[in-house]
Figure 1 (cartoon, rainbow, N blue to C red):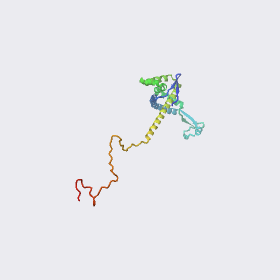
Figure 2 (spheres, rainbow, N blue to C red):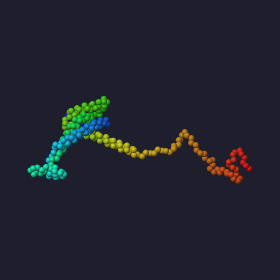
Figure 3 (cartoon, helix red, strand yellow):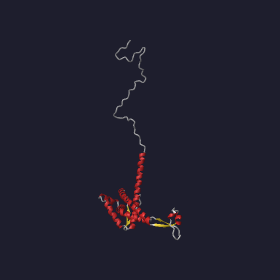
Figure 4 (spheres, rainbow, N blue to C red):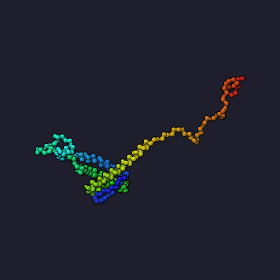
Length: 245
């Protein structure tokens, strides 16, 4: 279960309410939209890093390069005219703070509305959300509340708020993934359970059907049928016909 969080915007503390099923679905839709727009942010960030590295360099003396264990061809080093130690200029990357500010700038510009809705979704109660759903105004209400919260937020509050919101959404979606994993496991076990083969034996009705059985001999010790032979009569002579003398 996700931990209880709160966010501070415009001097007001808002409790981040747990996600129900409906709220989780809405969050998933918003995150999908933000993810699509984040691709453009990554492109902008990559472009910024390329430009930064093409114009920002750090100078390293030969001894410093050897101490770091870097392998750099000798022809890349420059020897000063005053016979000082050779050096090499290497491009450097922007700091994490610089990269974050660039990503935040472009991300906020592209996904300002969606981020506002995501913040609003975290602080709105299920009761209000249900009322908006019944009035068919969920998207508008989330947009208006998100805009209000973003307008009140200071830049420092906003950075912390986005971190809290991202953590909340991540916890909720992780819980959903765990539940789906348990469901898949249960379904898999059901599929692997051996099935009982159908009973193909003939069932004899007990009521309503007469079953004929072959008649048993009147006596298990009855005499054998006479056969032709001296002093005997044929058992094949039809009734009413006299036997020969």
